[in-house]
Image (cartoon, rainbow, N blue to C red; front, side):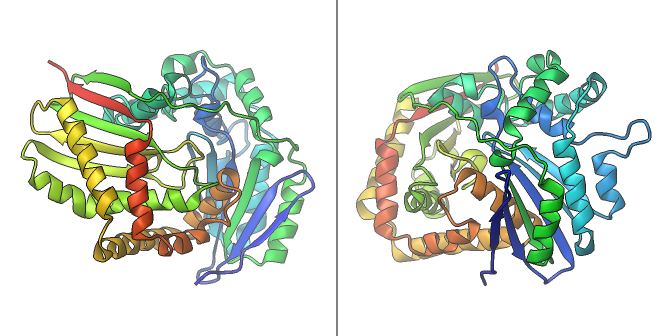
Length: 415
């Protein structure tokens, strides 16, 4: 069931989305800012991530920090930094909507980091970077794939950043980043849950009316480098892994094509790759993911589709690539059968509805879509796009993957 969604814009340019849902007496507030790791200066990789941390001021000189303020309401809050946006979200009892919005607005309009605050966050950020790098053997496949396809200048360090850069960061740089990007015109506030739209609008106008206006800063276009190759050696890794990355259609201007690629990835993962593996005794596992970090509709163009292969032992890369191309050629020629198509769409629909069942993830999704994909009518447009996807569109998507500029990332174990 699609619920009514209310939209309005403040005089300063802040876009606001309210989706009432009275099934539970909870309300979620998500503030999405159109700035992420791609907006980091070249010698300050991780600045967007650091600003996210500094947006959670701690208790100091008798003043409660943001986290403690929200917890005192019986609520929870968190945030995430991505390539091209940062999402802040909180949830509490519906009666706490006004103080929740006031607390959110206070940290957006009163951002004033100092050396003490920055020094307090650096060890936390360093631990997050260490965990992310350790788990992915240095960024395999996503960060490495983006660096190979579009160049490392906007992708080095991933979303978390480079610790050597962050140690040189100053509070003034964090404040300048905040003033440039955390403006009303570059921000969307979304509310989902047991909220009356009129009451929510009055509360938002009261809390966020003083947020400085401003527009989203332009980003440089990223041109793919076809045939790019990136090889990384990790001492802890055993064996060899190969990832093939291709750019996806623009989800904002070509949503049907983007969704067809998501259905293609699901069909390949569920049916075609398992059958292919049975014919390839050297292949231990194979997977294909649509959307950066495996999350579709979670980044602005350019986005990625990545196929990852783990052979049992040394397998000439050119042979593996030829086999992969042959598989895509077969699918582009025959298309999926009806059962494969129906199953893939059903699984994607199920995952979508399960994700949006939470008022928190729904508020976050509304904010993300409005910031990154303004031509779309929010996350509730996805089911219609999925249901309209045809076998011919999936075959065309396979054909497009074959023709698209691709980059290869090879992960090798240390000797």
